[in-house]
Image (cartoon, rainbow, N blue to C red):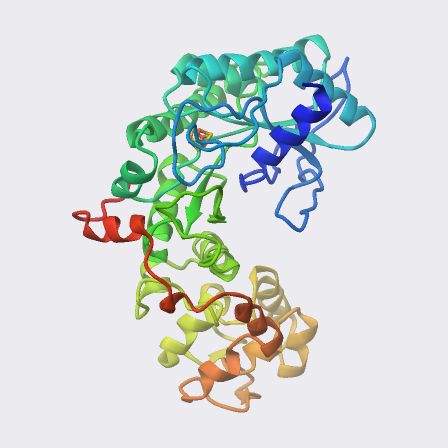
Length: 433
Ligand code: SF4
């Protein structure tokens, strides 16, 4: 098989991994080429979700495991391929020099065992960094169950490392990915966190000590392959940010791959809007001071697909509105639908100079289409209806053009429940990882 054929197979096999955005690394080299920018590598997303400015590829798609949701599982009948470490290092360098890519996202199926797989990936990194003196961005997906030593060595070469948590509960993982141990996933994350802390300490004493994964760690959860609710996904995501100092938790709507009979088929797709709502909720938890409970209270544990989670929360809490933008604290202003972090800061800065009026808000970046129902400025209210109005949900629901997307999906309630859903519903408890 020539390199081109391998690239087609292994690039295709890697496209299901969503966790490859890059930022936060400032690696530079003196006597080589390439540079990772703190501001993040510019990248774009192809229609199928592929990030096309990083070379996103697997070292091998021949896996010994049989995770039901994965195209590379041992029981799936797909073409298999494997790069040698030097082949992959050469391709990366050649693509970088031709300006096709700005970095590498390297993952792999589990060959032989986790440590052997990590060793092979480590060799790619060694060739790139030590032989070719390549200092561009590298993100490596670690294999749960590999040794601490492997994590430590890979972290010294890579800008970002990640371990996929995949599913939020032990029951889901046991049913769909029985070879994966929750303890292995969590201990790899813990090791990355500890190694980063040790590295920070070393660099306090020795300025030239090499950086360990300067862009931190991230993870990915699959959405919709199991009946796990958004509440569970968000609860785990919140815990991961807190416990392991994750830079990012990615959500990836399950895409039917092969004929995994236990899982939703193409006739029962996971609405991409669900993934979008989870990202919005994740953003609210990280930057707007919302808790998981606040976001999911009063729902059936899943986010409203028609409303963004902040608007949905505001509708459930009419008693908190309207907010007077001239006197309310920053944290309260942040909770107004249509006001983001930047516009909230601008409002605080502007009101130091004088009274903020309704007509100023749009210029400060406020999306008045939503915010008008939830704010007053100098006591003046500009909305067509008050926050407690029963029509508020309808008013704030996404526009019909966005709604129309839903018509692409089949009516889920009319379809039979997949086998995995039925078995998971019967499983005792839903203990988070
Ligand atoms: S270990 Fe990774 S590559 Fe292998 S089947 Fe599971 S998810 Fe797929």
